Length: 433
DNA sequence: GTATAACCCGGAGTTGCCCC
DNA sequence: GGGGCAACTCCGGGTTATAC
Image (cartoon, rainbow, N blue to C red; front, side, top):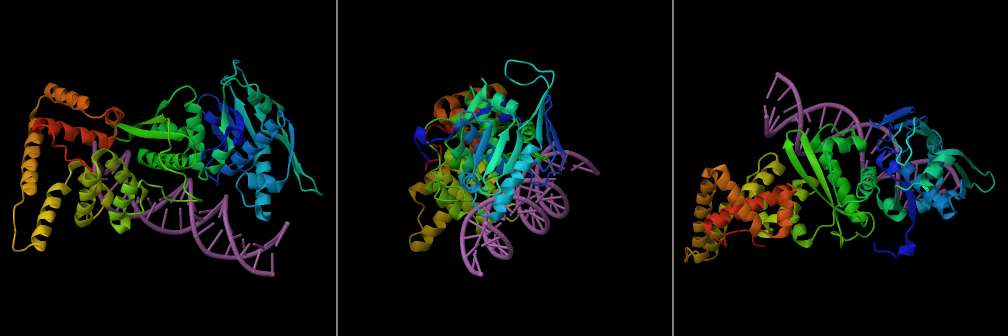
């Protein structure tokens, strides 16, 4: 993943073409597809609309043009073009590459007074490429860029340098498009907040419901985190049903997950999370939503806490395993069950000595105290509860404080436990790992 | 009862690989 | 280089559960 600056293949791209989509995720969009943004951007595809692969090919052609001093005409071998874009060269891929040229020659974009180049246009419309052909003898691919397109990018003061190697590694269209949007929106800031439905429109993503949008965005973000140097944390705020604000925060420093060897479909998880995932009921172990739930919970609540609730859910959940596990983690349903189980195991090992050890007595006392604390907090008036909450915020670590403010679900569960601990007296977090 | 969330499945496109 | 095939990924849509 780490690479020298000289190994980087940077492509200059105008912010407009990161903000507005040049290619689409759906492979089956009809010929003559039109996409309009409310700001006056109109995209028309006379032939099949370009997809992620076409977007990557265009990026490669731009790289070649920019390497040749912004050449309007480029000549590439088809084999080189394909392998540089991570495509295994063969006949069908060669035809797909030519199809890509046909897609791009049929694309026009139109702006109405929205182009960020210091000028405001009444109308501005152009193609991406003007001509393309292959040489009969050499089979080399020849492409003529549209002059306006090339100059808009060349003279743009509002641009990003995209690392071609990074965007090439993003195999999923969702991840590639989100990468473009994040790169654009982290232009002069490290935080970006957007309504989930608005983000879906920007993608554009056909998902109707917020839960589906969030699921897809999370999966895309996982891909980006695994395969690029862009490290982003996402948290959500649900103000009302069917509405959610997504907070993206650019992280600096080390990658969270190491780059996996070769192509991988599963997340590379820290060892303690992997061990916990191994405890999940086999039927649900592969589900990304369940893994995400455990990953998030372990960060805020600790390994022991999460472990007992997974085991409890395995035993008790009848239907909807994921929802049951979420609720168990929230309320620590597994606590009493876990202690009873430990006690039963001890009796099994030493049946002649069924003793009530000090630890068990302490745990029992803690359960009673915690229950009392919960009732006490519930009966506090708003002012008293807020005061207690502020006190808890002061004593938790800064990382958790940040997550609570960002609306992180499990951080808020952790804060609630801290409030209970404060009422009980210190040292009763029960979240040790 | 309706809207939304969660999950699942089939179809289509893409990819990697093998054989000729 | 060409053809074919299996595996994989993604999207759209259907079903069921849950919240309001």
